[in-house]
Amino acid sequence: MRVEDMICISVDDHVVEPPHLFEGRLPARYRDAAPKVVRTEAGDDVWVFNGTQIPNIGLNAVAGRPREEYGINPTSFEEMRPGCYDIRERIKDMSAGGVLASICFPSFPSFSGRLFAAADDKDLALAVLQAYNDWHIDEWCGTEPGRMIPMALPVLWDPELCAAEIRRVAAKGCHAMTFTENPALLGFPSLHDPHWDPMWKALCDEGTTLNIHLGSSGQLVVTSPDAPVDVMITLQPMNICQVAADLVWSRVLKEFPDLRVALSEGGTGWIPYFLDRLDRTYEMHHLWTGQDFGDERPSDVFRRHILTCFIADPVGLQLRHEIGIDNICWEQDYPHSDSSWPRAPEELHAAATRYGVPDDELNRITFENAMRWYRFDPFAHRPRERATVGALRAEVAGHDVSVRSMDRGRHGRERVSLGDIAARATA
Image: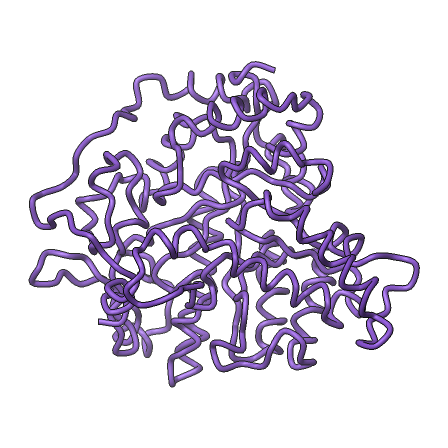
């Protein structure tokens, strides 16, 4: 298959929320307390809510910038590509990058919406969360049907309200919801607790896939405060490995057999060893730990319930049959620093060619699995021949995708440690 003939759906991109998000979406009594964007004396644009200031961390919005300008410093909207926060410009950037459709994780509320869950006024929190979900579904995903797969934020503080929100957004055509990799770290009951049963049931009833993004618990695997930031970036998939183990060994997948979970931005190359380790653990220890999978192995349960997702993972493509072809989806990660936009299809195609991935398997990885796991049909809105990398790029011929400096001289380059990042994130 030529790269121009590929069809690409990215199951992990990100939106930098625009300042107008909550305008006209909240009852009058909450308007003054709604999240809002303010400009700091340093010239940064930050969100403010519930007494907390949330910056747009630089690595969250570096699409189109030279790599030497990447960094953790907060940014203003002027220092981002408009496609980070403007849906019409995002669609152009997607087409120029050859991407048919996208799932977009939130930025300032956190991947799991824990910012809203931390609010003391839970009525305000619910109103703000529902306003966010409505904006995401109606405007961000509704502006150009067939180009965005909607995904809702969860009501973390109340599983019954969370179940109700799953059903509410499903009625609007949304069959994906974010969640945290470890609710216990946020002060909630663990994944093993029956506390979450109303949520699991609603997910199954509505055919909604739960998306667990690395870092969604607010913590990443670190070694020491003075370790280089490269250590944290390298170890990011370890968080996803932990939640995968939690789920497979929990009662949840046994008691809710229709549950589907995506491990977002966790990569795939580690999965074959992980599956071997699951089965080895079961074989050697289940007689005394009490685990019982009947005639199945833990790896069978993993493949039935869990979707793995990768950005650039040649080893994962090489080991695709050990993972399960139906359990792999591709991600672009626009506009984050791991993204290869606008040449991400070329990166994927090169790896697929290297390992001899046949066309039918590549199609499953690039778009067919995503359509099935997320109940999404882009071809209801455009014919298949207009959905390819080549056709999409032709539609926006001349759209500027050149790498250009956005550094306005406010921030200098610096070596940073994990302690630096923690301090700035909580400042």
